[in-house]
Image (cartoon, rainbow, N blue to C red):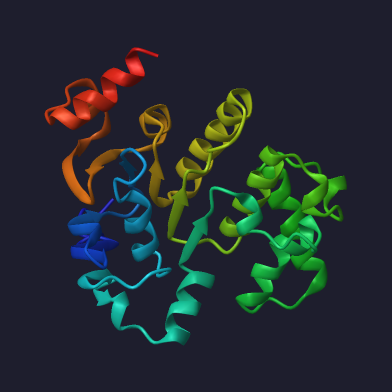
Length: 257
């Protein structure tokens, strides 16, 4: 492959800061994300990781900084441009799948709705694609007309993933995607996510408090404390040889469990 094909990061973040009055949500965060890379962001509750993710995904507007996507600052996008971005190139997987699904619409409708949003109109083709994607996330084709409320929590999360990935996004934001699920269900979902990320060549920013999740999924890791990044590096390197005292505490707390 021509090494010059990728000359710039997919996402370049500089000086991202969000304040809530005197309290800092996140402060002076910067990083680059390259095509096909998975970046994990970890930290305890209140560390700023969820604030950072919501700023990156356009759910909150930061007070300072820039978010360059394909060389353009997303913060300067019009509302219509942001909507197009979130329907096509970007996707967001919520911790609670009910926040990312339309609970009154069938499983197939949840997936097909996103295809219609990007311009597809042929009902048969949309249903076929929805059926294919349900299979990819291990939901039986005969459940296509069932509503999400008839599904277990793990199945709802897999349906939300299908809904988000069906349009072929280049970047996916994930907020604690395995949170609140039983351990066995978490393991199955993680295997599914790892396969999809690899097979589709996805770029991902994933926020979690679970170091086992980032160990399995993330190429690179950022550790946050009190709104600031205190350590960053290759995932295995950071977890096996943490340099910052806070990271050492996080890792040791897992080892002691």
